[in-house]
Length: 229
Image 1 (cartoon, one colour):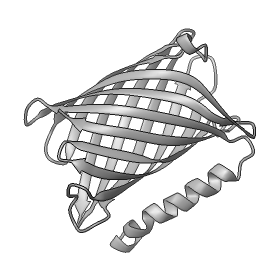
Image 2 (spheres, one colour):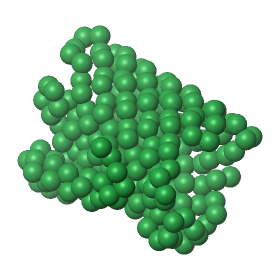
Image 3 (cartoon, one colour):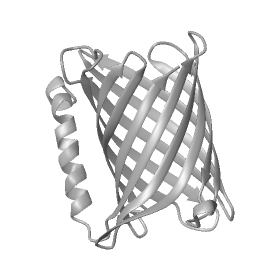
Image 4 (cartoon, helix red, strand yellow):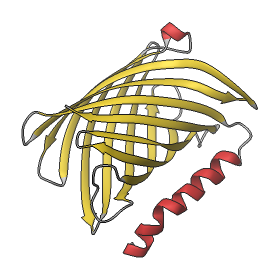
């Protein structure tokens, strides 16, 4: 049964799990990802988000390298059912053809999220369905993520103070011409509330892709800025 003690130790257990899995594999591929997210509150019930993201290879087959993989742009419209529950619809465009690293992609997303706060710790659940339309196939993917975040100084997040976020996510992809694919993601971030409208965060994400078929092992170095406008 989950209690306050286990929640407080969750980020450290998660970091150990991420590090152990990432560096115990020989086929590790290192990828960097930088993002800018713009959030706007249209009304009490309705928010919009636009994000721009760049992804690039950093490490592959025991050598450092830099190669741009893709550019992404996506949008979410979110309806706040109440203070704890939200419904979102999104659209996503990925460009890989320009960099000759794969097919472009158009994606549609439907999402439900729920949150609960225990003292200064916030627990979040996210359920997302995606329809990924690529040049030669369409992938139907379902995702569930459990996340924990908390301020690292005091009980509330004030300007200039750091916060911690960690998450576990499972993904299940269905394709027309091949077996279903199962992926897992383990993430840990540290961030700072730089201003009332600006957050910066950086961290690591370990991904196992197609772990039920032929597992591919990725470690992402993530950086992002989140701006309220």
